[in-house]
Length: 363
Image 1: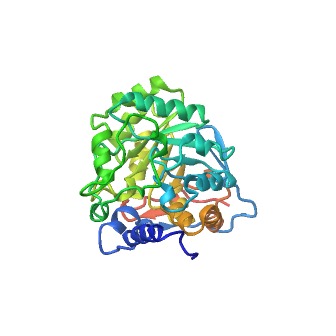
Image 2 (image 1 turned 30 degrees about the vertical axis):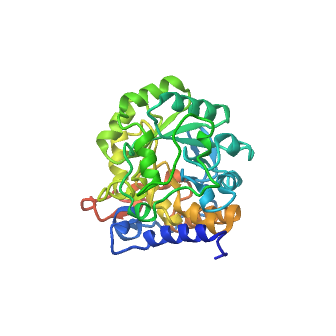
Image 3 (image 1 turned 90 degrees about the horizontal axis):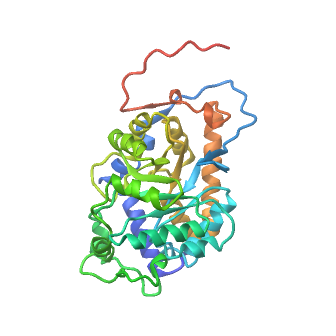
């Protein structure tokens, strides 16, 4: 791995890797059980000389069902930050989602060139700020809003508290520059937690999803759904899609991993809107499992940030290509030539009931 860009970047990346590798704690159980709890049932003697992994998301054709999740403050990982991520995603012909709390603004990301991009949104107490952000995203050519709904308060992030997390003085939340709003400043515990407590609206409800639809024509994806009950309400509220996410397992301990919650949400949506998965995807094999359980596509966050920290734009290009190659290989070895051929019968999970007798195959 290449030398990371700075000592602060090294400390940041090592902290996230430590959390990821903490297998004797909650992390593995709540974020990454893909390998342990979901196994393949490959089909054989199928002509896989031609495989198509392209798909369409909200009407936009992309090269693969692997998209870039919103991750905040990317210039803490690399000086190019969100610029590099936007360019790499566009080069891979896939979707990038920009975080509200990016260290590059919607206008700056748009300036990197063409590409399909979504904007992740937190709802602030001051709704005029929300309106301004949405309008700017529209003008910058963003194609959808990913509304984060699982953060009325920030989860207890003990590493942030211990480190008194704050942005370095040379960085800022660029989407909020020039607005009359509080800044992410130093605090006795976590500067981010203090910022969220002061700015993000705890009263957010399903009525606000409907309100958001009145101020924008962009499709709205509800990000942070883990239950069938909320999936059904999201459909009723007019969401264009659902993102199954547990916020990287950093909000509420003991919630299910995304892969374990996915099928419940998919069944509740009943095909009326697409369901995506965000969280825990580390290999192309994980992508296959998510699609077999009903996801229309996946978003990846940590692999992008780690590769950004290691090698900037080129690092992200490499990780997206690795994911693509692994996924295509998994399809070939499972006997699938297109995404529509990936079915529930291709996987078996620890949490499902005993498999019923399947229809007799024919030549």
